Image 1 (cartoon, helix red, strand yellow):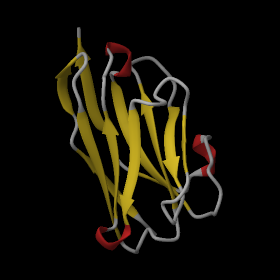
Image 2 (image 1 turned 60 degrees about the vertical axis):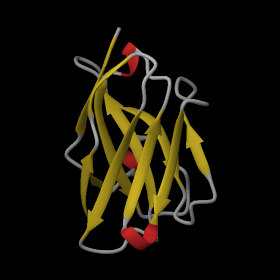
Image 3 (image 1 turned 45 degrees about the horizontal axis):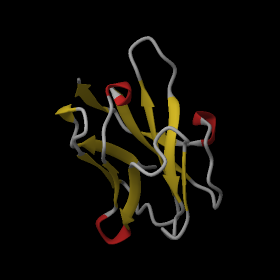
Image 4 (image 1 turned 45 degrees about the vertical axis):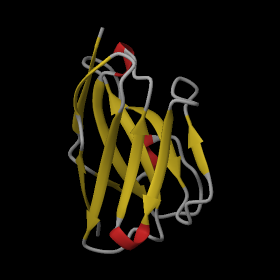
Length: 124
C-alpha cells in the first residue's frame, strides 16, 4: 500500500512557474512508475506525464512537452513536477499516481494509488 500526498500548488500568473511535489508513505516508490494527471473544472482527468521507476525514462502529453519536467528522488520517496511557461489552460487540480509496473502508462486505470490532488490556478 502507498499513500501519496501532493503539495506545491497555488496561484501563478501566465508565464510563471510552479514546482509540485508528491511524497509517498507506507512503502518505497522505487519500484513504481509515477504519473501526474490533472482535472480541470467540468473536465475529465487527463494524463500529464510519467516517469519510470529508475528515473531514466519520461513521457509527456503533447500540450506540456517542453514546458513540464518530471523527476524523482527515490531516497526521499518523492516525485516532482516542474511546470514552466504556465498557461491559463493549465489550470486544474493536479494528482500524482503510482503504478506498480515497468511500463509508462498514460491511462488512469493503469495506476494503483492516487494522491488527494493540489490546485493549480494560472491567471491571464
